[in-house]
Image (cartoon, rainbow, N blue to C red; front, side, top):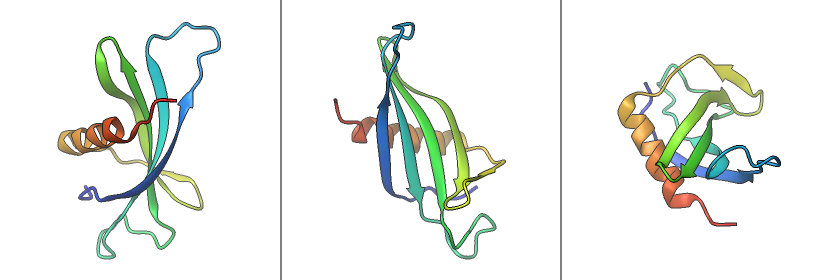
Length: 98
């Protein structure tokens, strides 16, 4: 798997119009830097979409997927446990109360 080098992000708070879900949910789009020698490399760039949840049970990632930026083609790859930890920490540090 790729060594995670997150170079930027965008995010937005997801609304729960019916109040069924506890806590706050955010959708992050992370920009990843991938070495040209890596089989995952794309000249369009690689992104990671993450659903980040913060509630009374703590912070967690409930869903994510890697994709090719520009084409939005989903890549059938999973993060390793230590990479998920990096992403979770990044999301926690970069979520801004709205």
